[in-house]
Image (cartoon, rainbow, N blue to C red; front, top):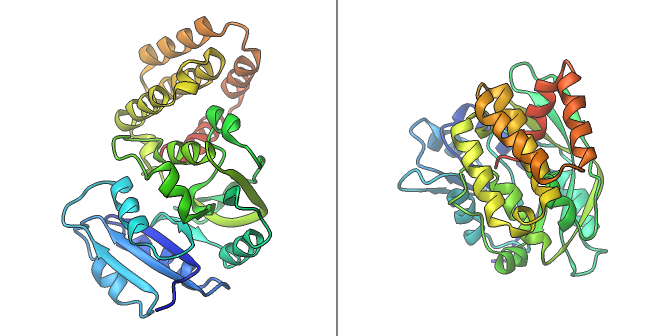
Length: 301
């Protein structure tokens, strides 16, 4: 049996109502040489029936015996993948039909130093389908330094050489948030990144992402910072992370802890004027809450 060019991995848990949209966006790709691995993280809804109702020989359905979390579900799919490239899609997001086609084609002309191609995406309201904004790619080549400061990559847009996971490892189940960011950062230590300068996915915003669960988000972000010494030992970069968490805590209803983070951010990097300018702009912007939510949405995985 010939190996597919691309292995698509969709981890899912109790989102039967959204999963079909994600699956169909993969099956509607112009590029056809792929397998689709759906990893069910022990859902208690009708997820098995939804997958079984879609007749396509490229779909492989794996059901975990117990609920183990997104990183474990993703890792299970990656381990089972047979393709040269791996593409990830969350069960509540969607690809545009050109997604795989443009990225696989671009990989044909790139050196082996490039491990990842990503692209742009729309922020879309789950409630009414309205496009809230978009994010286009900005950095290529050695992006490690940029990723230390921010997660500028949307997870529905990456096409990754499978060998990247062999060298950098898999997703970290110990992180309660920032799992995506952690993974891209580890890959960026070894491989260059490239992008397609177009919108190739829809990232749905519905308030149920982990970014709105402060009890998971903040400890996960703290562990992520501690894990990556190039962040924790660099006062300028660390101050950016602390101020972001501080502002989010202020907005999220924990002003005491939020001010503690902000004070620490200023204390360790008092000359980091760029960081303060961004904070003031956010504070003065009437839409700052939505903006911060957008920024932090895909920093959480």
